[in-house]
Picture 1 (cartoon, rainbow, N blue to C red):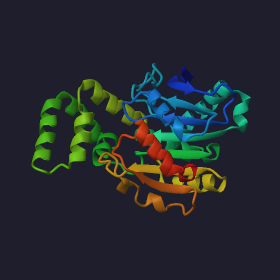
Picture 2: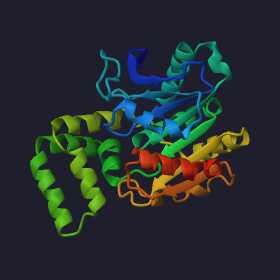
Picture 3: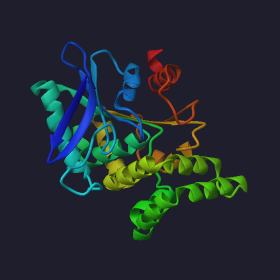
Picture 4: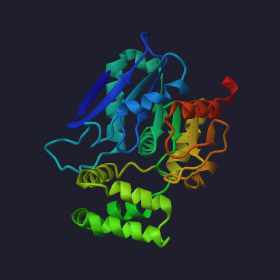
Amino acid sequence: METSWTDQGWRWNAVWHAPQNPPTRVVVAFHGFGRPCDEMLAYLPLYEDGTAILSVGVAHQNGSHPPLDGPVQAVLHPEHMAKALDAWLEDLVGTHIAGVDVELLGYSLGGRVAMALLESHPGRWMGLTLLAPDGFKKNPMYRFAVETAAGRATWAWVDRHAEGIRALIRGLRKVRILPAHLEHFALHHTEGHAMRTLVANTWMTHRKFWPTREGMRRAWSHMAEQGGRVHVVFGDRDAIIPKSWGRGWDRLVDHPNVRFLTISSGHVMRHPTLVQSLKRTIFPCDD
């Protein structure tokens, strides 16, 4: 069913899928850029019967938004969102939530959101599954556009001169200056005024949602010591977020409950055959 939560003017829309009986596990999921909330329900087979999923729309997408009486690109802090999620889950599940394991699931952009929430409140979560996750490396386009005044001004200029910029991107690819995956990334994120606005708003609002290595080391260690599990899965053909981006992060915690894994896929992992491949890779003992 569709559900929503409002806190201090911030509104999040979500899809809530729960068993008939009180859930034994709750997974809070976050989708990829521009993707619908219900897409994350495709990953239900990764979890045992009795699992509920709250698939949350990130701000500016799926009807979720910052306070309407404030700036469009208002900055959201992970600590604020984590507290709102706590209240939302208690409203959905009731006081029973206190005895239920709550986990995080994130795909692509949603992986960055999930890691930032974990770092802000590491004792709250008992599991983390990241699929083709953003958050391990800032690409140059993002760093320039979000973290510098010149970049923000340039992005506004790009919006006004988009066709010329897109022609330049294709030209740079044609002479092999720009790699194929960066051409795809740049063309996708500059396609149409609505997309360019969505990119700017989403990136700016979530600019505090970047995990740190030290924060993840502490959070993953704590989770593993409490019996929770961390699964980070990359596709071996993913040109958008290649597995090499996880290099170094995969050595933060030496514990069998913290695993970096690879499946045979590109960036998209939601198709049923790939979900089954994910399940076999993450839980090989279930075969």
